[in-house]
Length: 108
Image: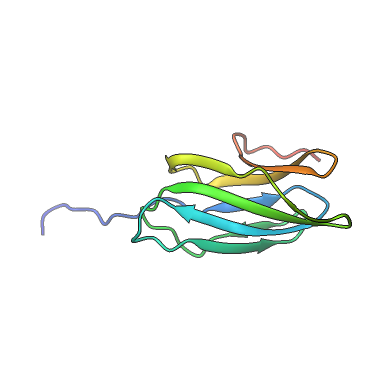
């Protein structure tokens, strides 16, 4: 009917694990109509959600599995964002956080 375009939604969430350790966590979305995603990502790898639709991200948590034990990273939190690219980074000794990626360039 007419010139309506199908609603595509947002890009699937991607989480790059820049640490030297494996990690897992949860991506939480704003609407009760959106299912949260549990994820697991190896070191230096990227996890990509299978789909997302029009769901806004409110929180991404991460547990980093280190030789010292499992360490909770500081989560990424938002009132609801359409951003899709995030990273788990190490910010100190046994201190990690989930952050939004703002540049497409990766250090080598």
